[in-house]
Each structure stands twice: as C-alpha cells, then as structure tokens.
Image (cartoon, rainbow over all chains, first blue to last red; front, top):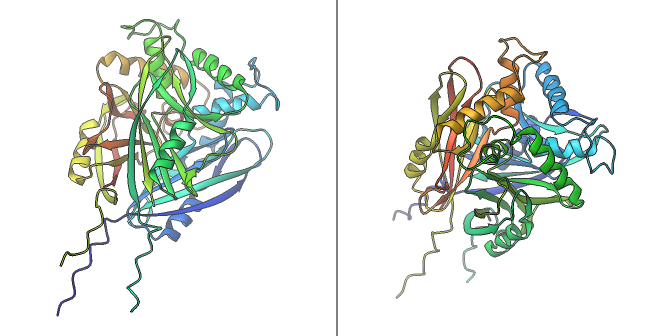
Length: 150
Length: 150
Length: 150
C-alpha cells in the first residue's frame, strides 16, 4: 500500500533567530556579512529572508560596497558633514557626538532585510552588510538576526 | 497506545495582519510603539518579525531614542534644515511643506521590521517606534502591521 | 465517521521568490510597482509581506508619490545637492558620479518590505515603488523579490 504523500516541504516557512554582539572601536563601518551568513547557514533555510536588527539608536546598518575601503571613509566623512558635531544640538547629554549619532541613525537603517537564495545570503557581488558605529568611543552592540523561509 | 508525536510547532510560521490609524497634529514624531506591541501580543507569535508599513509618502517611520524628548525636537529641526521649505521646489501643489515632506520620507523609512523575541517586540531598552509626520497640518495616517513567525 | 479536522490553512505561511532585471537610463527613478505586483500575484499569497531587494550599491529603492512626475525630478535634484559630484570624494575610480551614488544609496533603501493585503500589494493610493538609479549612465539592475505569507 502506498503511504499518503507528504506535503511538499519547499514552500512551508519556519523561523530561526539568534542574538549576536559586535564590538566597535569608534565611528566607522564594521563588516558583519560573515555573521549574517553564519546564521543563515545554521538556519538550514533554502529560500526566504534574513532580517538583521540593531537594538540601538546611535549605531545603524547599511549595505555598501565591500571592495575599496575608501568608500567607507568617504561615507563616514560625508555623514559627519550632514550631521556635524559643531551644530547647536539641544540634546548633548553624552557629548557632542551624542545627537549626531541619532541623526545619522535616522537616515540609515535600524534593520536590513536580505533575501536567502539557494541557502545563502542573496547579496550582490559587491555588497557587504555593515554595522555603522556613530559614537566616537567603541561600544558593544547587540543584533537580533531572524531568518524566515523554507 | 501512544498517539504519534505532533510535529514541533515552534518553527512553523504563520501570518497575522492588522490595519491601524494614527492621528497626527503636524510635524513631529508620534510614538506608536504601544500599537505595535498590541498587534504582536494579539498575534500570539513567539519568535518572528513585525513589519510596520505606512501607506503615505509625506509621513514615515523611524526607530529612535525614547527617553529625552529633545532628541525628537533636534531630529525635527535638523530634518527641516536638510530639506528646507525655502528651497525652490518644482512640486508645491499643496504648499511649501509638500515637497519637503516627500524628501524627508525618502531618507527615512516607509516600513520598519522589528524582531519578535519571546512573544514581544525585540526593541532595545532605549528604542521607540515613531511615525514621523512631515506635513505642517495634522493628518489621519494609515498603517498596516504584519506579524510573521511561529 | 468524521475525519479529523484539517488545520486552518489561512495562517500557515510559505515562500515564493523571483529574480528580475531592470534597465535604467541614467540618474532617476524607475517605476517597478507593476513588477512587484506581478510577483505577488504569481505567489498566490493572500496575506503577508513582499520584500524587494536590489543587489547593487549604486542604485537603491524608495516608495514615493506616483502622481506628479515633478516629485521625482525634485528628489533627483535635491539628492544631487546632498551628495554633490563636486565634493572632493576620495573614491572616484569610476568617475565623479561613483561615490555620490554610494552616498545616495546609504540614505535611501537597499530593500523595501510591503504588506500583502487581500492578495495584492498593500500600497497606499499615492504610493509607487521605485528603483533609483544613481549612476549617470544606464545600467542593468538585478532585483530579488521574496513573498512570504499564507
């Protein structure tokens, strides 16, 4: 007797979530692509999305070019001009880099959602995922990485 | 006789969606964290993500510091300098705040995706979710909140 | 004898993913709303989310007003002022529009997540989804569109 066919598993989605910490050493972009790749691999998900979320308002996320480091230096300098420490910010409890950090976070991302294609992060060839530290001193930053897919 | 074990339900994901309205009273940030928390609680999802989407192009979303209100005042003023009403915008059908509202929306978010951890919104201690009204007059704004997880 | 009731299928979620290419003709916004609508329709998902991801760091995504084309011209011009080609960028391997393209991408989106409501993209009346080309010359841009829902 033929057993009843199992439902096709491909399209059923499931959830996998991990919390990770990243140490920064002051303003600038920290490559966290490998960390996201590891969580996707651990999830066993073949097709879906990976959402990376940073639990802070003075650090943020961007997906940027992973080749020439000058891109990250230019971004850091340009952002420093868009939200300068020299501006007369009302909120400056933690120093001149406090409110610029919030402003820089407001125009970048608190979360990035990246597709999972064939069991791996579906980034383009030149794309890397970066945690952008906006404070002058280094911090311990916490990320929640959630993978959903089948 | 022992019944066959049920498949572990933890990793299967499901969807819950609600539409909500928010009244604003002109430019500035409105805290909608509680609204998102309520929808997550109603969903019964333990692990997953909550996507909040605003169905307008002159209001947007940001996750920002929830402690000192001066942060929101600084953000509002700084954004007014980045996209000033005094600039010679071509599109001004609805007044001088019309096109700046679109520009401000373009550099903030139309959606925010927040992890769900242990059945609750996985925000950091100092994070709040805000609807940012970019028009001078108050508006009724519509949000679609979608929870996916298991 | 009554067979055991099947579990309610409404809330079970599944995944559908497609890769698409878009041709651009230099700086400016290209409407890709129809493309996303087609993928959502093909997915058969009734309630969920659609995540559109662009696999480049010199083109990005925004959701903007779909009525007056002057909105897109103003956005293009304003963004050109925020990240001007005339600035002394360190990274200029591919010409004066190279680094401004990365800066413009950093403050807009690499992905947009849009709710699916009643089997269709849950955009507001005046919202359109746009691929924003930030390079002076036209490019072939690759998108990954992932639909998750039930």
